[in-house]
Each structure stands twice: as structure tokens, then as C-alpha cells.
Length: 205
Image (cartoon, rainbow, N blue to C red; front, side):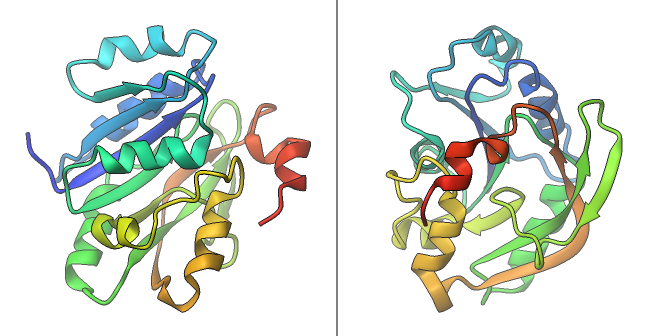
């Protein structure tokens, strides 16, 4: 089915979690998005875990590891619709997220994008804490107008980490983000979170 919303799932060695992520994106209520999975040359069993969904998603496997920013750009460039939203492969989303974020952008034409709040969950999906995206922004769970995002250069492919921070800094006042105070996104906390790595913490924006 054709859709004007594409969910971009970027994956690198998250075979343990990626199936759960894909299921949550496919099981949206009231509005069915396209789901694009970009595997950034994983070396684990990710491809095998993604394979059962091949009829329901667009699957792209990078020939070499290019990093999350460029992997996201690959997905965005392959999206046919008007809107795009990123979901990390180790996270998952509420079944109502796409419907509400899409409705918001259709009703607020001045908004470049709209984010939802999120819930931190543990390895077993138990709730840790509700978070507000206005105060503690993350890179995912933000629905963008695809044409404006590409017109403004998309993500900087040189950013191996903190690509969303760089985008916001580069766009400045042009980054017209709105916030929907409903926690649709589930941010999984585990030992392999990219944000816990020393390289992430030391990466300059």
C-alpha cells in the first residue's frame, strides 16, 4: 500500500532487537506507513532476523559501514512519501505514533517537524522513566517533512555520532520543531547503547 509516511530503521549489529522494532513499526493503527530498513553492513545475525519481514518492508543493505548519519540519508532518499521518521533498531514505538504525528504535521503547515515524548525502558521492556523531548531530545521519534529535510542537506554524512545535534545546530532558526507531549517512543537502555560509548561522548558537534 502506498503511504506518505516512511519509517526509517537504521541497523548495525542489533540482531537481538531488530525484529521487535520492525513489528512495532508494521503494527501501526489507523495509518499504515512504509517501513524501510537500512542495514549498515552488520556482522551479526541481523540479516537473518530481518529476512522474515521481506514482503512487508523495503530492505537496503549497505555494502560498507557508512555510519548512522549516512545510513539515515540512504533511507530518506529511498522514501517515496511526504514524511519520514527515524526509529533505531534497538528501540520500538507505540501503535498510535505515526497516526498522531502525521495528523499534527498535516494540521500545522508551519512546522518543519514534530517530535513525541518517549519512555526509557530496560532490556526487558520494563518502564524506567518518562522523558520529555523538549528537555531531553533524542534523534528518533521525530516526523520530518522529507522535502525540507533534503533541501536543507539532510544529515551530515561525516557525523558517525550525534548527527541530530549537528543538524539542529546547522539549521538554527530554520529547525522549526514542534513537540507532541505524548510518549509514543520507547528508548531501550542496554549495555550496547551507542550513547554509552566513549567515542560517542568524545564526538564533537
